[in-house]
Image (cartoon, rainbow, N blue to C red):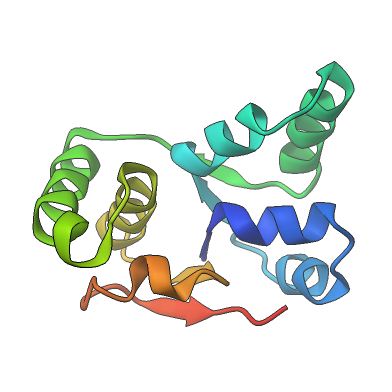
Length: 125
């Protein structure tokens, strides 16, 4: 499964339901976009190290930005930016899920609902 950035943020905030969700998954993936968002959100070097250690400890596979993912994300932005405010980061995450034929888990369903072919799994904290 591919996890949206928000799921890991819920875990950092102490949400046990989110923690259980990833603990039981043996095939955890993050888009490089989510990984960058988590690192960008770090408040200091200690938090930066925490993010990196968390990703390593729970054995997340970081999926790279490929040419196909970039192209698909561009299409999503072209199709949905005006009608549903599709942001570049969300488009990259959704495109990563679709290009890798994986469901995307997110509590921000509204960010992704415009993409009809996306296997979206809603997380309710």
